[in-house]
Image 1 (cartoon, rainbow, N blue to C red):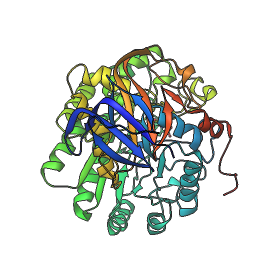
Image 2 (cartoon, rainbow, N blue to C red):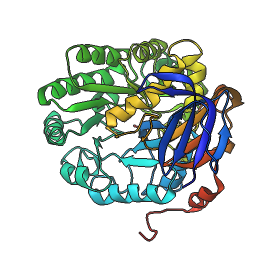
Image 3 (cartoon, rainbow, N blue to C red):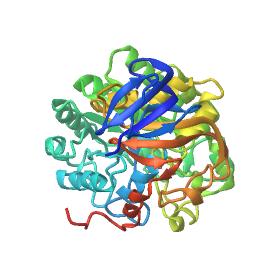
Length: 449
Ligand code: DOR
């Protein structure tokens, strides 16, 4: 593990409130020195004047597709996409095949991530077996396994049965883990292709009403209050949801929430192209929903920004609209989109954006020592140039999938270097060559332990 000295960067450390020019020295996997005029003979010295250095980003919500759909992404390629996007820890959703509904799958995902060595992957366990909504999973077994599962969700769908959800919440509360929900009343949204509104009428596509999300979230918040569980609302997308979370927080319910870059930037008007790249669940909403999400992000109702990185194969995404699966990738574009569309228009300051990508998600997941740049903290760091302009070109992605709606968009803000566990895994925007071998492995599940 090399010794690295970053000099002359703007250090943004949200936990200590630091925002100043400083040098940062990394050694033995830890941040060992933060200050000015640091010298270190033998260390690799990287001048990062003009760039920001901050804790590694943490994404609460990604889909890595392994096991089961390694043609779309593997733990290794998803980790590489994360690293290239400046992320050093990601929460992997359980809707794999087999489902991550037991400790064996969770441990395998975490072990595959350790082999790739590009970022930490914290598997989320499903709330119900096989995501079928009927039987609660062995939550205790998953919390205590070596992967250390700390979030439980049936993401992709919501738990429809209130009694099952209540019991799952009680079980989860006993371990002080998180119950996270994809808020969706399936009876209202079933068969829906897009947000229900003006554009679904215009295009003749079946709509998913905002009420399906609002009703499910309202029920969940009632149960979260009843059980006292730590509850997390995944990919909030409606005005009603933002208002419900605002009220619940004011009333002391233990609720946190995330919002995706796409729900902050795009609306259902995009669907006019009939391009399934814009199909996502929850769907792109109306402009007033998007505006409410922006206000909710700005005032802290929505705590964290999470990508919901959802890789899909080209064949499936380019099939006819009704058949195409929902989802879009986001790890390699999140920072630039947020600087261009959220910081530049003044919705968040750059330092606050960094906080929503680092110490806030670290706090939600209780990742000890992460989300900070302090002497002794784990050396998970991101260095980015906030003013570098580039054009989104999916052909350059290290993700196995290309399903981004932002192709061709001019954006600002580029990840230069990512340090994970004290090692440079991304240098000058590219994966460091020694980690590239992991990317060509079709699946790491079958590999020797
Ligand atoms: O659009 C989505 N895609 N939403 C989800 O909740 C699941 C995800 C996926 O797995 O593709």
